[in-house]
Length: 153
Image 1 (cartoon, rainbow, N blue to C red):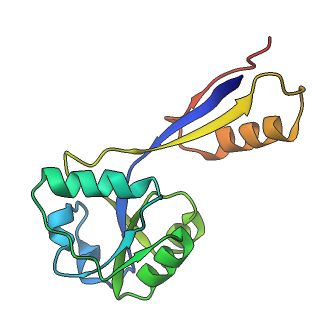
Image 2 (cartoon, rainbow, N blue to C red):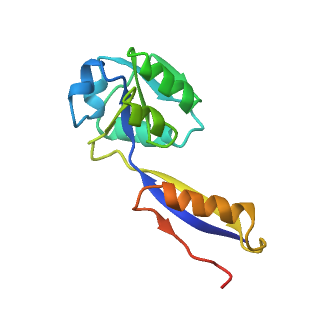
């Protein structure tokens, strides 16, 4: 009885401080990041298989300085200027707006988007908290987001 209400494909990118040496580049590939300290997502995060697969298909040996299961901590490490982390724009909107972090989408052809799904139960009552969340997400997610209308109407 589950229904997919929202689908949003989010580009995966390199996240870094504005003073990081790679910040001047507008387009980055994983290979560009190789000589820098990398903060790689831990197993269990949706980003990990995307990045591992892209590195494997590009025949790159990635040796991250550390692995992390917290996107917030990854962003903080990137803001320090010492690390590059890899994630989507979700959760770092304020830092991007304040320019304390930069996001550079990865241009590798093997890097797929990270898919955000909002899933709910079909039989839930109308005007529930899930409906409010869905409406808020639809307003704030990128315009390429696919929104499914009321499933029960």
